[in-house]
Image (tube, rainbow, N blue to C red; front, top):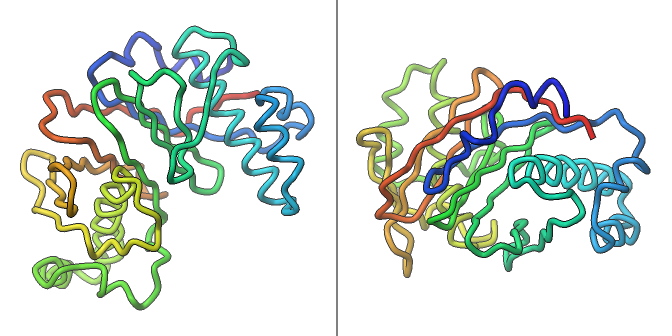
Length: 238
């Protein structure tokens, strides 16, 4: 497979657990070779787009996702049926397996679970939300952020924003739905609880990837097995 494959035993991706993978997308291989890993529908989507940068990024991320899922599920890469849900997130034809993805530069964050809908996000520090960031947080959240040392504040803002964004993504809301509509409890035992109108309670767990970024994964509660593991800077070579 690749050097990445030696870092992870697919048997560790246990049913009932939330399994997190951070992998590096192959950005060097010829695009035509990458396209061979995609489904006919995915290739058609790439060729119909008028945006060259988007075409290359989509093709390479989707090829990486297909390679990872085929390896974990023990299926031929072209046997995987990957569709899109109402919010544009990739979904697997097997309805018993829930999937959520996000990407940042050449990194792809993938979350898999068998018992819960998922939301996952990956953000650079600081988040690209502009000066309107104060509108994303409740007063008690702003108070907490202002207690942080100035050097630590960008990371704290990003992490709090990531929690809200992961919960928003789980519900399938589009980015136009303000994160300010997500109410968060302070983390307890490593899990924060998000409240979104019309949704059951959502558990949110922070993901830490050194200095490059922060992330969060959201799952429906009650959940007995909110456990994550990650592979930092893995490589799947298509």
